Structures are given as structure tokens and as C-alpha cells.
Amino acid sequence: MKTQTIFWVIAAAALLLVVFSGFFERRQAARKNLDRPGWISWPLMQVLGVIAMVVAAVLALKG
Image 1 (cartoon, one colour):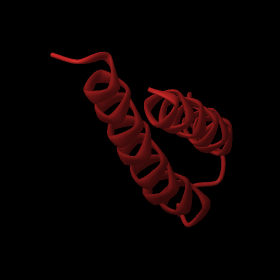
Image 2 (tube, rainbow, N blue to C red):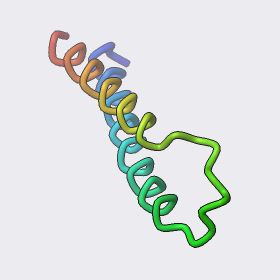
Image 3 (spheres, helix red, strand yellow):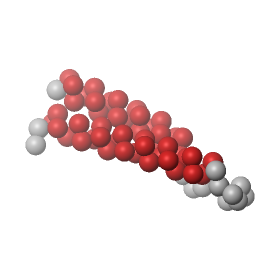
């Protein structure tokens, strides 16, 4: 498998992380029991996913 393909797969996985973390962040914000905070900072996961996606896409385009 070429290196460029691996970077595109990593970028796609990071995009999935961004989408899922957005979904779970919205779900956490709309919870009924506000005394039960989550273990994961979903906005942080979104930011890290976007950074990973951009870095992987740039490396894939660089080639």
C-alpha cells in the first residue's frame, strides 16, 4: 500500500472522529441529568480530529 493511501485513510478516520464527537457532544449537552458529566471532552476530540485530518490530508497531497 502506498504512503499516500495510508494518509488518506488516516484523514478519513479523523473525519469520522470529528463527526462522531460532534454527535456525542450534542448528546452530552442535551442530557437530562446535569450532575453526570462525561469522561471525555468531546470538543477537544473534535479539535484534535480536525488537526489530524488536516495534517494527514496535507501529507497525502504532498505525496
